Amino acid sequence: MFTSQTSSFQDSIDVEERDDFDNEEISGYGQKVQLNCYYTIYLYQGTRSEASGENVSWNQRRTDSTTSQEDFSLTLIDSSLPPEAEPELRTYISRRLGKGALLGGMGNIATVELSIPEQGVGCYCCLLEQERSPEQPDADGNGYVICFMGGSEKGLNLFRLELDKYVQGLNSSLQTPEVCGWHKSGMTFYFCLYKMCVFVCQLQNLETEVRPYLSQWYEESVMHIYRVVQLVQSNISFLLHAALSHTNVELNNSDERTKADVSRFIKAASLQGLSQQDTTTASLCKAVTEDTHTNLIIDCSTIPPTFSNTVSNRFCDDWIQAFLNGAERCNPFLLRQILENFKLKAIQDMNSLKRFVRQAEMSHYALYRCCLFLQGCGNGDVLLQNARAEHSDLPEACSIIGVLEEFLREPSPARA
Image (cartoon, rainbow, N blue to C red; front, side):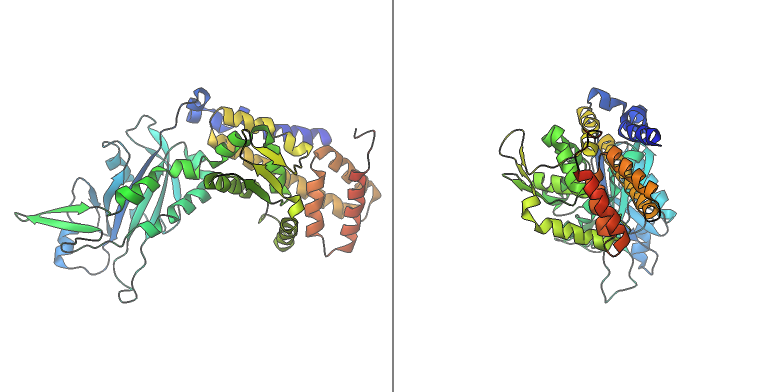
């Protein structure tokens, strides 16, 4: 039994040796080649409801930067794609919109074939719908389609939540579009010359806010795990243990970006929210956080940073090399996959402990097997901490957990 568990654990930390990320999708990472990433933003205008003859006439037109269909028009605002690739992306997005495959506020990730060096590239796209005024609840829907391209479809899927959140952060910088007449302020305007109508779409804050924000999508949404591993190196085990044990991490002499990176790493590595007894787990997190003596303190005034109040265990230490290998290859997608495998293994061990505890209520042999399991997994302190929180209302289970905690505290020649 324990041989198979060891094999399973070794498979999980050796993900870089067999995962799809090691294939042609990221072959460049082995040579530390900088990943090309792109962004595009479109104005989306719904035309399903009643419209004036002038607007209908406009929606039937097609310029170099606008794709119009019966139900909507899609107009380019800004893009970092090569000129020959952007129309291909617009055609793809139009097809997705036409099929109703883009829902407001929900990101969609797929592989698209574009005229770029990567050819097939992962593409995240999201429709941000503008709120309709109470005076015109049935007015045509307007909004923006945001597209991020880089890496593979599988890689971007690992960062879906981060990408969704990053796109939502753009809402405050986007203005409500105007679609008629001449406007000195606002979103859009027309030039009418010799009965030829030319549409110009530009955001006033495009260069000052929107473009810089879109340009940083990869650094802000994908690279934070890589930056944390690069910062702490082999001390990553302390952060992993802090995440599993709900220990607060305090950074001193650090910039805001580093604080945000570490906070997001801890959140990504934490099991909070995945527990069946989420309320008791949250209570445990709060109790540990309020005890300032248990805080993991990182002083960033030195290189490398100095750690205080460090706690780790064999389970977390065993993952150090996997993270260092991923960082050495400059592969943020591989690092995220390793982090997900780390969490998966911790969850599997937690479920195994729950099963053993239930069995130990009826069998002394099961209690013995539970002791052997905790001895072999290397994560007994964290597992028992979480188990006690989840079984706080079950006296028999708490009694068994107390016996197991005492077993782990006692020095043993076998464990030495």
